[in-house]
Length: 134
Image (cartoon, rainbow, N blue to C red; front, side, top):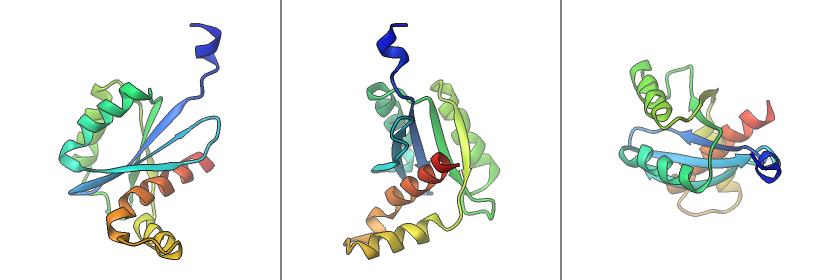
């Protein structure tokens, strides 16, 4: 590994999983600031993560998981984890509490229109920032 490669910051991807749509956010170990990327249909999530990982190699994928049952059942959680691991991605779960509600509030405060259209991406950003801040 060259010196340039060894100093390259680690990149992280976060998924705010939803039954029909998922929000994605990214950050790196240098800035430690999460940025919302996009919303993707759940059935196209793994393919999109593959594409993003080709552009920017992720050392970890953080997945928001609500212990109060907001994420879904354990089978769905395990299925997502297995699909990501098949891509040689390390998966870590981050506890999330009311990230969608917080996202909607953040977007409303900025005067953003189409709040429900953007809340998955903002939720992913919130989850990732929480993980980074730990």
